[in-house]
Length: 305
Image (tube, rainbow, N blue to C red):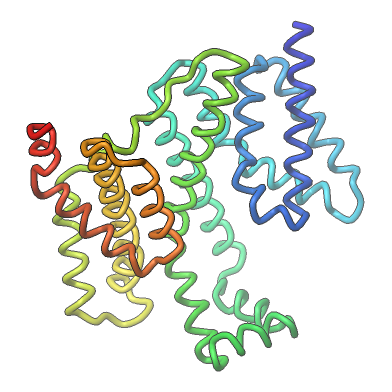
């Protein structure tokens, strides 16, 4: 029990320190790792130890001046549900993919609830966002300079609102996969061995996704829908998501090809980094993914070994 309390206090301190970094210039990076100390804390400390220490942390943060503690508490609570679900998955020794999927689905639920609440509290959320961005002298001037005119700023804001579903899904998947990758290393060191996900060379998406991708791609190329309409919003979100999925499949094929040919893994890693940094190359990686799913290239390469 004493060891559990000691571990809980140490991980509580790490979690608190990670929260404070969100308010610094490092926050642009550190927010991506907020789940890791929480997951480790909930796995290494029993519930009867974690709950009172966590509640005490929230109460102590409320003592911070200027509403700072409230902000940090909200951030912590925002990351708590997905962290708790993934910690529970680790405790019951679930498969790595199931753990990451559970974390991603929990994030989607939390963010959807948050967006619904925001639109409920502020009935005209788009206008409120426009006023907040353009009402600030510095931000308004920057946005107008960036987009050329206020009309284009309004269009960009509406585009951002329409793309919220895509942003939620990408954020949820990224958080779950990154957190699993880091938490697995920590838990394997201080708890017990946690299996890793399948290597990327073995990743295979359902073949049916090819048809969804091609249908969405054709609709986007040949049909024009009114901006803000339901078909337009569906296409706006579905096409990038399917393109990312196919690009991941394509990069997975490059890892498989490098392994089959005995090439250095630096080649597919470089390809992945280039695709992330230069988004115009994503459709090319997606095309590789389509061909990988549509044709038995991998089976032929295995046969020719």
